[in-house]
Amino acid sequence: MGSAGVLAGALCLSVSAILVKLAGVDAATTAMLRCAIAVLVLVPLARAERHRCGGLSWQGIGWAVAAGIALGVDYAAWTAAIYQVGAGISTVLINVQVVVLPLLALVVDREQITTRFLVALPLMLLGVSLVGGLWDTAALGGNAVTGTLLGLLAGVGYGIYLFLTRRSTRREPGRLIQPLAWATTSAAVTTTLIAPFSGGLHLTGISAASWGLLVALALLGQVIAWLLIHHGSIRLAPTTTATLLLIQPVLALGLAAVTLAEYPTVLQLTGAGIVVAAVAIANGLHRRHRRHRKQRPDPTTPRTPSS
Image (cartoon, rainbow, N blue to C red):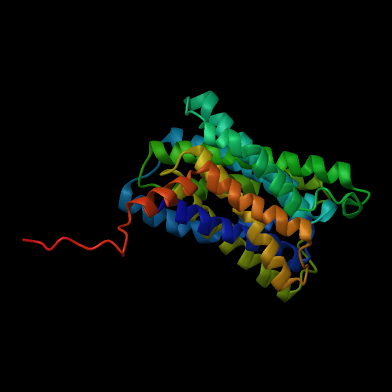
């Protein structure tokens, strides 16, 4: 159940990259509105959860606010990176979370990193880099350095956010919406404060179609995606959550082909296959499949009549 939730959340985040590009609104405004619109939806849901399960502790609120600051940095940097180096490459860079999340869990909470994960990690990074076109230097353009730094900064913020929300949600079970509401509010404030340094906010001149896409981005990419990921991640090891989220760029590759007519190259398809295989290795899925096949009875073997 946990894995299904994280994968469903990854699918929603993949759609988010497409919505950002289709909306065509500047990076700073997109990052802020994504959070601000989501807050309008999350606040009544959080109030209902508080009435049902009780409120968050002050410590829980503090963790959520800190997570929101990291998320705000992530969104501001990632959205800007999309316009600098494109959705594919920015999605690659943000996935340094696959290292940040398990590393924080190891250092802070002493959660061990499996040998399978360490073996599969180079493959995962190689596959994701191929998916994002990182090896195609001609596609990077003149903003490669700035875009790369922004993408890496977003990935660090992403990993910190995942770690903090997973930690706080585990400590106060049954409270899933309230931490997300606090974190999203904090992220909205953070992106607003960062905006003057990244082009400023431009709330006028946004078309009705773009507003519709921004609302869809807030609902799908903020509310639904993170509720699914938070619900799933508290049931999983940090390495499992981090590796499952690497499916996001693979899904984004397929969605970009369908919606934006951005068709993958042979290298990108090769990278997608490597990512899927590496995620399976990291989570031991190949061994489980093998054990399942061994445990299944041979249909050609005659059964002994029951007495």
